[in-house]
Image (tube, rainbow, N blue to C red; front, side, top):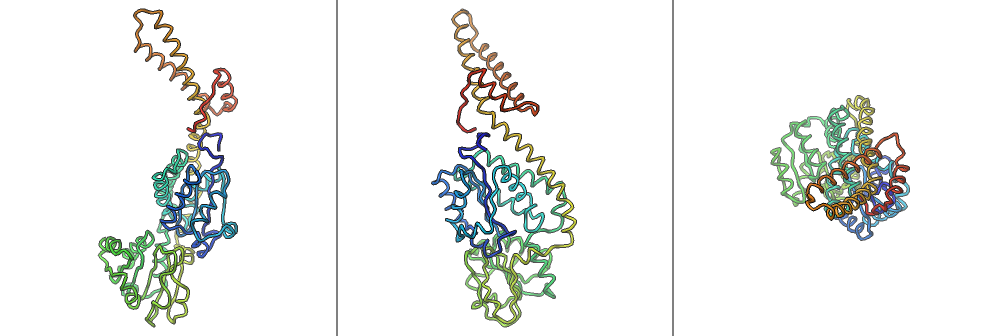
Length: 420
């Protein structure tokens, strides 16, 4: 990657772990809270990492960044989570350069999601890129790549039917409730936690169950009130959690805590209770299963539930992949121009030096020398010449490396080593 002049470091990496090889417990070890992300970004700056984007969702934790060696990024992850290097080595993946670029495209386009066509990850990538930019950790390469992935994701969503029907974990949870619970309209449902999955689950519950007995609880009550106001639902204080669980038939937990927030001691009722844990790390202690009547279902199980349209969606994978290749080709075209940008810049400087020297000569020879007109003409000629060379270097029929060497030799150039 160094030849493209996109970074001071040699390689672009994607390192991380996902639902494919890491179960919920291991993913929980590597889950990053908002504070953890900030600590990781600050450590990256201290370690002179130039560009880095980190995402952490219920299905995956990943770092995309430049480094001399992937261990630099792995260490950042392990230093800021409960995960160890040994655990990482067992379940993780490391992609380099072109493979890392391709991986980001597949992830951002929903092709690598736990439920095919789930596009929630693209919003996570946008938020992560914005955070990196705020901390000065997003170089032009990473920004351009993120934008290309967003473009591909948008086209796939609009031009294919890979996301036809509901595809998210939040919908799968509601589908599970429909399949397992009779008379859902009259059941008492408690939603504890109002993060993104919690909000989406709430919306799906209201839309599909017509249930008017849904209560929201969040540690920060104002957040729950904002969501409840949208759907006209009931909100209770966090201090009422135990009594609300006692009154519930279904408990959905979607908090962002790093440790279990629900265990057997908080459940005082003997009546049947279905608990859906949509959190990573797990937020419901498995000791609740010691209680009679309690059924616990975790996110990984819900993700295996597919609606009847999933097979139809799979047929659109080739179309989605074709869009990715098209957008990726445009990105690679831009990337290739970074390869010769320093030489073109140096050529322009050299031609400007020629023009300045010639203008000085003519200024001394011609008494009524027209300064402004001469500068306009010389600038236009220089732009035309540099554009001509740039178009030549973009031509697929020429050897870019050989042409660059020839240009450098003819014009005796010393291209700027500054990254472009």
